[in-house]
Structure formats: structure tokens, C-alpha cells
Image 1: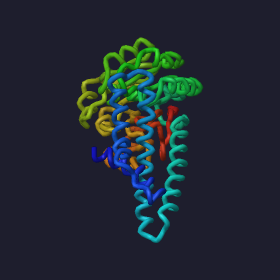
Image 2 (image 1 turned 180 degrees about the horizontal axis):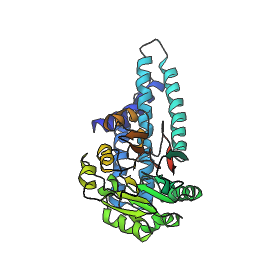
Image 3 (image 1 turned 90 degrees about the horizontal axis):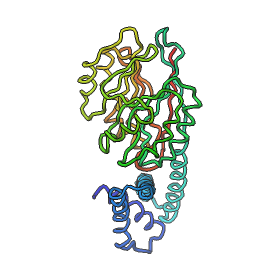
Image 4 (image 1 turned 45 degrees about the vertical axis):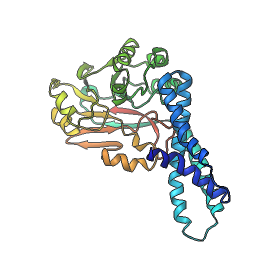
Length: 337
């Protein structure tokens, strides 16, 4: 509650006091700033219909705006140590909050394609892989899947790889996921932490019915490629524990799908050539990236780990606030050379 008060109550009430210094912010308004977002979010958790998901998206985006406001208010508090008119400082903060928030919301609706090249063996030379990750249908409306699928199909990939957190709320029905059935290329999926938090078995069944190959602690061989999918887990030893039970195909280019950028050294020792992950969102909203990097030092983009190529996607969607600041919604095109 203290954190909620710091983010939801302090920034807007402090901004009001800067803009109108002679007006005392009523306690009822401060209580409402704290209570209404929590009540509406709880309402969504209890109902989980399309309309409540829309309300939840608005509430969570307001939370993101308040976080942006908090960062700017903290800067304003430093400026107010100097003889500056509070109204002028408040007006500057208000203008920046509006501009930055509008950009962050706009940026969260744009899809960017990032292309990378990975050295592979001769048999798979020219293969194109498209990775999507952290779409977060639930936080995002199901309609967001349509432009994702259209973009992926335009890339003419040989395989589409989904590295977890496709959904983040329960009762995401098959009609909401139907656009995934229009992906032209064979599609493979490994679970993320949010699938574990909600109806895991149901979502895997729905994806399978749409023709998506769900890889749960197993591997398949296709066209000189060995795809391995390992279930997400909080334990940093998950990859080491699960991958040793699988057999590496010595003639294949081995690709591991794992939701979070953990266990890379163990994957490389097993013989993985390419490891694809997500989870970090690159922090999604600055300055969260500095905090996330403390937990996941491999925050974003590509790394070489003991001869293995590791790619950490910033995610294709957003979790919580429909905002991106200092990061982008990405679909990754991987070309094997």
C-alpha cells in the first residue's frame, strides 16, 4: 500500500499543489486516487470479461503515467530548492507528463522488426526464423494479434517461434487467439511465467488446436534443426535440470526456446547453438531498465556465451501499462547463414 500510495497518490496530488499552491488537496481526492485503480483492477480479476480487460488496461496505463509523473516530480523537488515559481515548475512537469505519456502509449502500439544474422552449418543456411515474445494478451487486447500475424507473415519466415507470455490473464478463449491460426509458417511455443500463473493446460490445448506446436521440456527435429522447448521456472537451475534429460542431435543446428535469459552457460555446455529468450521487456519504461538489469544482467539483444548465440527479445507486447519508453515492441527476424 505504501508503494501504491507513492506511485498513485503522491505524484498527482503534488502536481496539483504545484499548479494551484493556494488550494489544499482534499483527503477524499487522495483516497480516491489510491482506491479507484485498486478497486477497478480487483473488479477485473473477479469478472475477466472483454469490457473488464479494457478497464484494466486503462487502469494499468494510468499507473504507468503516474510512474512517469513520479520521476518528473522528483526532479521538480530538486529544482524547487532554487528560487523558482512553483506554478512554472508545475506547468513544466504537467507538459512533460502529457508529451512523454502520449509518446509512450503511441510507441507501445508500433511494431518494429529487428533483423539479426547467426552463423550456422551449411545444411540450414538461408533458414529464416521469426521470434515473438511477451505479447501479453490480457494486458493487451486480442486485436493486437492481427497486426503481429500480418507482420510475421510478411517476413516469409520458415518457422515462427513464440518464447512465452503470450497471455497473462485467464479465460483468453480460442476466438481471441484465432489470428495465430493464420500464421503461414510452422509455429512453435514454449511457456512463460504468466502461462504458469493462469490456465496453463487450457491455453496449451487452445494453441495446439490452432496448429501450434507446444514444446514442454522436449525437442523436435525439423529440416536440419533441433528445436528444444523448456518450461519456464523461477529456479535458475531449470535449464540445467531439464536439458540434461534430452538428447542432442549431433547433425542438427540446435535452438533452445526458454522464456527468461537464465541457464545460458548450461545450455551452451549441452550443445545449444542458438538460445532465444524474452521476459525482460528491456525494462519497458525507463528507468525500470536499470532495476531489471540488476536481476537479469543480459537485458536485451545478443550475447555470445561459450560459443552459443543468445538473443534476449525486448518483447512484442507490453505488460501492465500499454506504454513503452526507452524500449520498443519487437518482432525479431533471425537469418541463419
